[in-house]
Amino acid sequence: MQHDLALVELNRTQKQFLLTIALPYIQTGAWPTWDYVQVIHDQRGEDADEILAGLPYVGTPWPGGAFYGFTTRAGRLTPDDTIGLTIAAGLPLPEFDAVVAEPFLRVLHHMIGLQASIRPEPGSVNQARLDSQELTDAMPGLRPEFVADLPSLLTTEPATRAIGNSGTSEAGWWRSITRSVLAFRAAKDLKTYVSMTCDLVHRWDQENRGASSAPIPALPAAPRIPDSVAASEPSPYISQRLIDDLQEAGEKSPWKVDKLLDLIHELNNNHAAEQPYSCLALIRAIMDHVPPVFEQKGFAGIVSSVSMTTTDAKYLKALGGYRFSGDDVMHRQASRTASHIDMNDVPPAAYVKVLLNQVLTALRDASADS
Image (tube, rainbow, N blue to C red; front, side, top):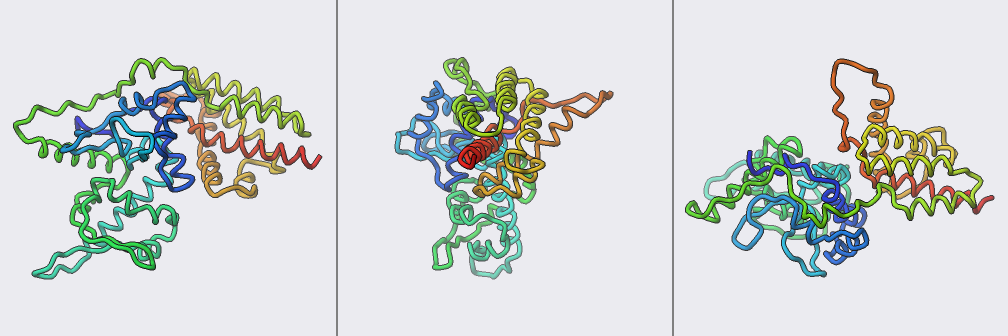
């Protein structure tokens, strides 16, 4: 399909831009202002407006057209505008997929099941109803913050945008389900969902523009980044500020951090050089190196025993999944099957930063106790 965000590969700058928007929502349940996004990128020497303009999208992002991209807004924004991400952002952002996109897909299929099971009555509009309390009972694993904000997510996504009646009660919120969700029965995974959504929006946009309008430009196979952004120096995988903090804490702590600092330095260099094998091996080495600082024998002990926020625990559990990639890099022997490991297999920097922040806290605590 020509217009399909699921087939687009974003570059590192674009992924970092989406992560800047995602993290406040993952941590607090609120989308950031455009001013916040601009300031963060100003500090990196990047232009947030240019990065936003370079993101691919389907449809027409101006009045009268149907539009779907990785962000909820496009074009020029005012500083106090808020900007969010669509479910499509779960494709380039594993952390957003785990916290938002994957639960959304499960809710979508719950809605499909509710709508498909209604008993139609002649002379009436036959709609099922999604109730927040019923949803929580049916899916007890959903985060309360996710359930609370779900109406806005449903309104943003084309698959669930259509709505009959809605309202709130002491128990939460409710909204009618329309037949539009039934078209997404086959969307069992995120990539299929995004492809089907892009196809739907493309058809809507053509209908809105009229059959006699000029043809809609095809979505580029590889999105173009403005030269001023592409030429900017990329941010290091682990920031110098965090490295400096670790060095300072180590000097005051009984623990020696020289090897840890060397591993981080090599990781930054190899990440900048886009060398995935070295990155994965070094991350695995860091994970195996730091447990004694927490009085643990292995990385699993850090996740299960160290006191931390729920969000940090989720990041570390996700980082633990990359141990398999490290094993693959270090222990898979030569064979006649080609290896396809690339930079997409390297975990997001946020995962490793959470681990290093926990190390920083442990070093400072050890210094206070000594």
